[in-house]
Length: 409
Ligand SMILES: *[C@@H]1O[C@H](CO)[C@@H](O)[C@H](O)[C@H]1NC(C)=O
Figure 1 (cartoon, rainbow, N blue to C red):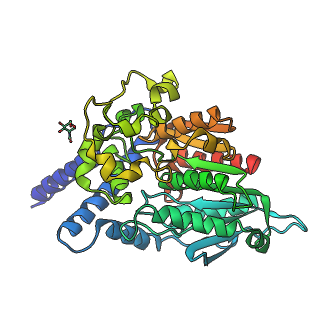
Figure 2: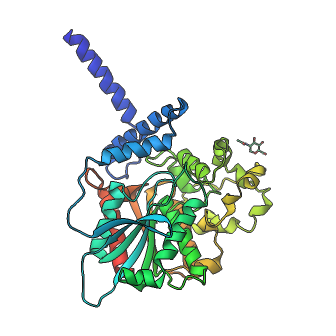
Figure 3: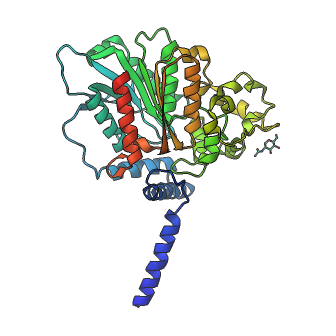
């Protein structure tokens, strides 16, 4: 009996180790921890996928619900900023007001847009909530974290519109005054899909003359910025590096743009941007990594541009060429008007080159850019900076972000 038990537990342990183990680059931060985290995320997606195929619920809703449930286990810190949920122009927001009061001194303001592939995440999610509390405290600021609506309830451009509407409301001089925020010191920030929204909103605020108060800083954390090249060196190098796999990101894009998932494979091989795509000629230079990336990041990769592609994709999904979805496609005249930028990129992230190319394009447009590249970073580090999901690379991402904002906002 004992022997059977031992054999079974041995086999189960081996199966578990096999499930968890994935080869990882040597330089990634805390590889074992990352493997366990990745296995947990993979399981969540598998169960979600199963429930969806059984017709029980959308996989995204299952994942969101599970994450929310697990968070109840962690207590909310006492003290710190004053936190309340409200709506700005009909959009849900969570506002964090630093409790520091210096007589006659106005506070800094920051719009924060969380990540999660336009489908996951929430202002209330522990990692984002703790980050915003910390930013409010340490920057003596008012942080507005926007609860924009998500896939599958809404698709592009609603997520963007929610963020823009909430932002425009906050930037109204009388609203800033109500929160004692200095109009000269308001910024915007976001990570991943939130970085995409932050970059897009920053561009729109810069060019819209009806918005009187302008941002003085933008801080983009491994932003998603384009969907025209899924074969940049970082997409190829990191296609199987957790926690954001190349194919998963294409699925998130297709959901966001409300397009058919049968496009994953053609887009994976850049069939939507073949040489025969006339509509692309005026955009190519804006995402041409052979000129926008320095050689150390190009490594030995070669551009993937099919001679003949699938011409229907850009027609079927015109949002692929919409700057509100893909801020990297903005014209230089627009970039010129955007505020000084902080762009955090991670070596082990498919989105590394999106961020690096945007940094280069902003610099070419004359914008001051702090490019903060993390050689051991992986996608999502900003969300893994607090107990119990704490990585050294995550703590450093938070530290660097706050210290840049402290100096520049
Ligand atoms: C890519 O485009 C070519 C040329 O139109 C076509 O023959 C091929 O089937 C496409 N590949 C995919 C995966 O759609």
